[in-house]
Every structure is written in C-alpha cells, then in structure tokens.
Amino acid sequence: MSGAPAVVLVGPMGVGKSTVGRLLADRLGLAYRDTDDDIVAEQGRAISEIFVDEGEDAFRALEKEAVRRAVAEHGGVLALGGGAVLDADTRALLAPLPVVCLSMDVEEAVRRTGLNVARPLLAVNPRKQWRELMEARRHLYEEVATAVVATDGRTPEEVTGAVLDAVGLKDVAAPKTVSPGAGAPDSGQENAMTQQVTRIRIGGTDGTDPYDVLVGRQLLGELAGLIGEQAQRVAVIHPEALAETGDALRADLAGQGYEAVAIQVPNAEEAKTAEVAAYCWKALGQSGFTRSDVIVGVGGGATTDLAGFVAATWLRGVRWVAVPTTVLAMVDAAVGGKTGINTAEGKNLVGAFHPPAGVLCDLAALDSLPVNDYVSGLAEVIKAGFIADPVILDLIESDPQAARTPAGPHTAELIERSIRVKAEVVSADLKESGLREILNYGHTLGHAIEKNERYKWRHGAAVAVGMHFAAELGRLAGRLDDATADRHRTVLESVGLPLHYRHDQWPKLLETMKVDKKSRGNLLRFIVLDGLARPTVLEGPDPAVLLAAYGEVGE
Image 1: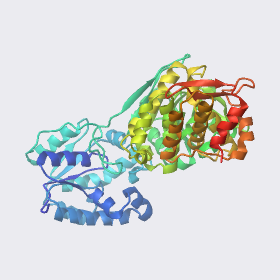
Image 2 (image 1 turned 90 degrees about the vertical axis):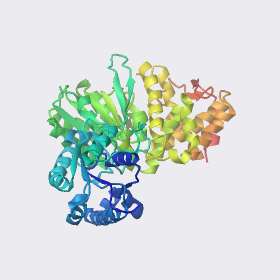
Image 3 (image 1 turned 120 degrees about the vertical axis):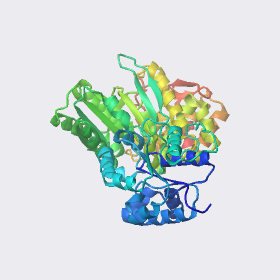
Image 4 (image 1 turned 120 degrees about the horizontal axis):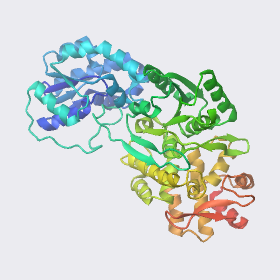
C-alpha cells in the first residue's frame, strides 16, 4: 500500500501504540505498520540489543530511515517508536500528516513497563527515567500532534474510538472484543492498555496469613501495595547479575517515600551461605531495620531462598515480598514459604518456614533469561505435571521447542498451572508434615548431585536427573507402569534437560542422600509414583533396587 498514512500514532514507550494501531487498522479496513517492527526485521535483532551493541545514536539513525521509508510507502495506520520525534527532519516529515499522540501519567507508565528489560531507556528507576524522558519529549509530541488522546483508565477499544473521533475518521467495522493475548505484540513492542493478571491464593496455615501470587506482565505497580503503609524501610536483596534491576527497584521505592536500600549478594547458590546471610543482617542492622519494615527479594531461586531466610531470622521474622525473575523461582522457590541456606553437609539444611506477604511473577522478566536457565526451570514445571497436573505434560509434548522459550504460546499457562499445584499442596501442609513431601519428587538425588558438583550444576538439571531416577526406582519397586516411566525420558529429553549423571559417583550420592531432610534416622525415603499424578512415599528401598535404578541413570 502506498501513499501518505491515514493516521500516525506517536507517544511514549508502553503507551499502547501497537495495540491501538492494530485495532485502528481493523476498524478502518487498512493495513498496520510499526517502524520498530521494521527495524527489528531488517536488523535481525531486538531493539534493546541494538542499544547495547551500538548505542542510542546508531539506533536513532536506523529509526529515522525507517520512518522516512514508512511514510513514503504506507497508506494505512503507522505507529512510530517513542523517540522518533527527537529528529528534526522526522518532525518536518510528519507536519502535514494526521498525527495522534497517545499519552499516560507516570504511575500508569510504571505499571505498564514494569520489569521489562526490553525497554532500554527505563533500565534504572522507571519513574525518574520516565519523567525525564517526558520532560524532554512532551513538547515534541505536542509539536507534531494533530490531537492528543489520554489512555489512562481506558481499554484499547475505548482509546481506538477516541482516536477515530479526534481525527474525524469513520470506521468500516464494528469494534471487536480482543481476547487476552490475541494478536498481542511481543515483548519488544508496545503493550496493551490492560494486562491480564492472574491471582493465585495461597491459604494461611499454622498461624500464617494467606497471600497472593500474581502472574502477568508489568506488575511493578503492585509492589507498593504488598509492602504496605506501615513500612518505613525497604531492603531490596538482589544478585550481582541483577544489579541494575535491584538499584532500579531501590530508587523507585525511594521515590515513593520509603527509606530504601539495595543489598547485593553473589549469583546463584553462592548466595546461600551463612556468611552471605550474616552480611545481609549487618546491612539491615546498619539501616535501622525494624519489625514493621519489609524485605524484597528479586532474582532467581537462590536469591528468593536467601531473602526469605534473612526475613525469617531478622528480629525473629519480618515481612518480605518475592519478585522472582526465573521460571524456577516463579514456580518453586518463591512460593510456599520454604526459605534456607546451604551448608558443607548439604543443601537447604538450615532454614525456616516463612511465607512471603506476596509474590510478583512478572513474565516480562523471562524475556531476557538465557535459554539454559529458562529450560532448567522447566524441570520444576514438568515435576508438577507428573505429580499432580498431567495437562502440563500434554502442553509441553504438543510443542517441546515452543516450551523452551518464554515466547511460546503456553508459557503463562504452564507457569500458572505449576503454581496452582504448589499452592494447593502448601495451603494444606505448610511445614512438610505430610502432603508437602510430594513436591520433593526428583529432589533427593537431585540435591545430592548439586552438592557433589559444589552447586555448579543448575538446580533444574539436577532435578531432571533425579526424576529420571525416581521413575526407574518406582518401576523397579513395582509401583510405576512402564509407559509413565518411559514418558519421563521423552518429556525431559524433548526440552533439552539431562537424564544421566556419572556412574562412579553412586557411593558419594548415596551417603549424601542419607542426610536428606526426608530421611528418618537411617531410613532412606523417596517420593515415587504409583501412577501418573499419584505420588507416594517409598521407605527403605532395597539397596540392590536403588543401585539398579541408578544403573539406568549412570553413564
């Protein structure tokens, strides 16, 4: 389609230009085009990667050319990137065109952009950065705009109608109801006005309060509500790898009036030591942390384990909020109130049951997760499928390659289903007096492997081998049918998780398993399956059966 665009949408990042643009194009019977999409397609990489690799100036040059071509070639609805109006030539090019600026206030901007690192200019302190960006750009948006349409508190359909009214265009199609996720842009594009947020309730037991696990995108705006008004100080515990994110949360909370500090800890399992916990206690003491103050743990499973443990032990227990940023942390570590650190004798041998005040599972945080870390987390998802919810296995088997990426069609459902499995269990048995033990399926051998590897193996990889072992143990003990045992191999292997470990390490692994937290005296206990979604405890298995089961795993 050639000729001048029928309407051009401009405005800040996250305001919803892509969502409204697509709806607008449908209503007008025209084609839709986004210059950010053009750049990504031409460069073969995300915009955030261009910023990192070449800098903003290089990106702006690409953007200027993309806008020039689109205006010359496209006669439909055109959406521009948030910074396109910075260029004087581009503003001159837009002068004779019908241009609508979509606007929103700062609180709405933070809710929509959340923790999404695909927004390269909001990497640190979203509120402050957004205000500064708008101060620099607002007059430019107004210079090029024929009309300004506010998006705050409006659905995408309502905004679309307001744009049509503002430019005097008539739609050729009735407004359509857009189901969640249908035609939604990817993480590098503008987000919808409204985001679907799933709330999963964790029941309070043993004197603890119930809390919610929120799953969705752009959840940062929910954090202050979970912290509450009584808190004066907030400590953000984060790993070294998320230094910018940790400081962004600290600065954002400080901007809301809290006395906020960021406590950086080592990455992964290196954070789960008594020494690191003591370092965090010292930081809390120096900050004057009281019982009404709150800890926020942001990061993967190791970080949330540590943050919860520090919260459980400081002043005999302060409130904490989990902001997990990996699949593993979302579906396992951050949910259920188990907190702990490792010792030389084993994993999670020192800890406490201390549920959080709430959990924010922002799926946008997964968009930048390395593939090996993402796949590692799938082990806990697959575990939930075998012990309680076989639909999880069906979804993964329908497209294993799609399951390996956060862009897959079932990502949100897989994570939500896994959380629901754990929610049902821990709501009934917080302190692992019975039912909760089933969540340790694959973990007895898995933890032993992790210790043997000095915690250099990813947790999910070790648990995958542990589930393979548990399936073979169940089969050899006469508990599990061949088809379900074999299904462990096929599902785990299909997403790239390991099935085997070194055969000569069995004696060491056996000794480590004897001090597993499920053991009673000298009695080894394993979670096995009597069938699909029928977990049970196998006590004191014959050593010959254990060795034979490991024979299927060892290599």
